[in-house]
Image 1 (cartoon, rainbow, N blue to C red):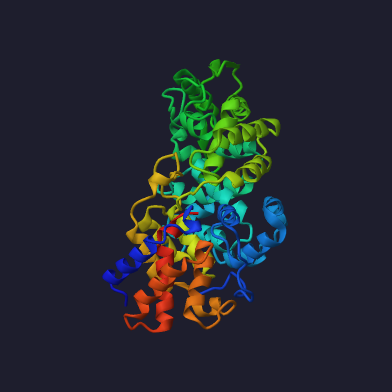
Image 2: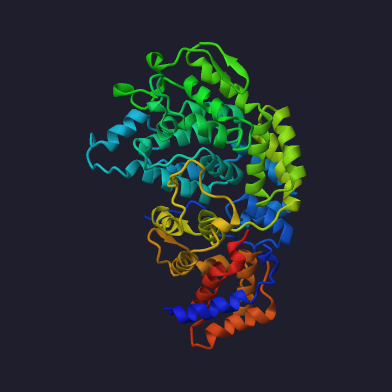
Length: 492
């Protein structure tokens, strides 16, 4: 076992290599066969781009990228429904709650079936999310599912959201992640999980609740500086009175309760809304999704996610113009941001999920995902667990701390100590190994960091381990864990 003192010594060695180009920034096999050829060398820009287009590039993705280039790779990923993902979907079939209707999920959650487990529904959603992000070949699509899950955040622990979020994930986020922004907002506005999370079931004419109306403008469409007023929020809340969720047999379905609706004339963003029941709020939604402030707000967030914490203003402007010209076509906007923006990309600090997934993907690990989520919980990014509606932060400063859980994950992963998760480092290296430890370390650094370590740093690292009398195979494991724990691997 590696002592904490030994680990800190190794970490100091890795920290000294900050000049690396990459510093600039039940077991189941779902991933297919291990690599049979050495991983493709990529320059720093291509490695950075591939890190933004995946949850951490696997060997076969590196090879595909090198074969067809950035533009063709992006187009291939945008056409996600043409990518065969059968092997991943087949494994997900063991989760029987993912396709259930809300009333079925509620029944499971309220002890109407044997083997009651209240956490079964949200836990299966979390597990499925990890496995999709890890093993799906539709990586850009899964990245967009993650993005919209943050944008339309729902805290799964609030009320009946713990089972309604499964429906929202399927019918709102995943169905519309690469389609039309208008359809995405429309579906979210009619989502029982969203209405309950933001208290719209308590919004009625006798005492309007402004919570959902405010977040619909501030977080979902216009943005906090989008030009709306408090009066607009109050008027939109009146439009949304009666937007509710069915009870009893059709529990969990959307319903408009006309008897709770304020039937007076409203005025939102200068638009006079005549009494028309459910159509009043829908009329406002149509106005919101085509507003220039919405275009700027959404494209800024997308550019922040894929390009840099402070994305280039000219890129945002071009993407916003495309948003307006295409009526919010998500693929068209992504095409601009990725093709124009990736050559300008700046280092992004990995959020916990990206850190964990990149290590698992690059090492070709096998997992059922359950214990992996426990590590995400310790790092502060348990899935669907952010209590406020703004979603998990997407800027470097929010995550540049709490390093110890990352180090612990790295060493537990390499030692195969994470329950339900394993890797075979030696089998992985068979594609490139010469049988010489120094060459193996070069190969691992290239795999994980995008480039070999400087020779002096590599040799010092190897000496730190081997001089302590550690066997070569264990030395390789310790070095691999140190690379994953290193500052260089925290960036993408």
